[in-house]
Image (cartoon, rainbow, N blue to C red; front, side, top):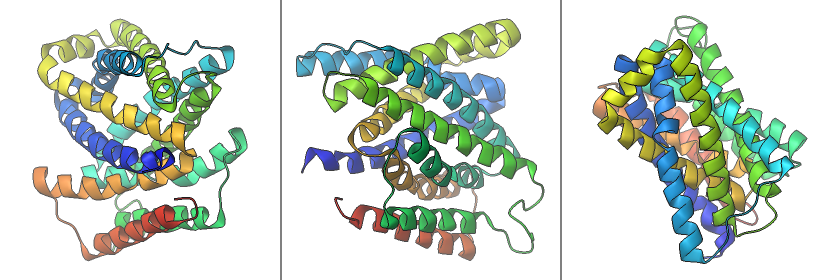
Length: 302
């Protein structure tokens, strides 16, 4: 396989790992609250990110790329907006079902298409735009509920929080891809690992300080449930490493659109662990998501 195509398996693995991490964080909100569960992916993921970087540097015989001003600005922006997006996502999950919360958050690709073109100059082909719109239409269809009369299906708070979460995740994606591109040396793998370590270091420091001052109970609580927190942290770091590899190899919109397959994974998790059923409307939406993903990977250069 051409190395440029490795973004496809990397993205599929990332989506599966992220679904597993979201499931673990969803359960941790019951004991740690929204912010406490959000910080688990960063605090417990950071050591694994360091391990990934060490393995990549030693196995590849490479030096870790030196940061520059552009890299630091991009990675800091990505780090902050991802924390905000995570908190909003978990707040949405407390208001709505796991699968439906994922649906709202996954309006991200449409927002990302705008941000990535404006900030990074990432190209968006007509077929790519069609793939994004088709897959996102599937996401919206899956969110509709019979008789609800609107996407809210019982209130606008959850949809607004979810869509806002998607916007911040889109901004974080722009930040992380920009940071990877800003590094002047190294292979895509070592550059993606370097960006991940820096982002998690910033996020961990930020959240430890905030929780230490305002929510010490949540910070201490995550230390008490360290076993489940460690597992969630590993899955979060592993998912992020795969996302970052994708960002290093192709434009951000390709990665995040293919990542919409996470919505289908979330449906499976909802049926298996949360005893939530799938309606005919949701199945139609899932078919549209799949059609959009097929358009994406079948396009020129893929």
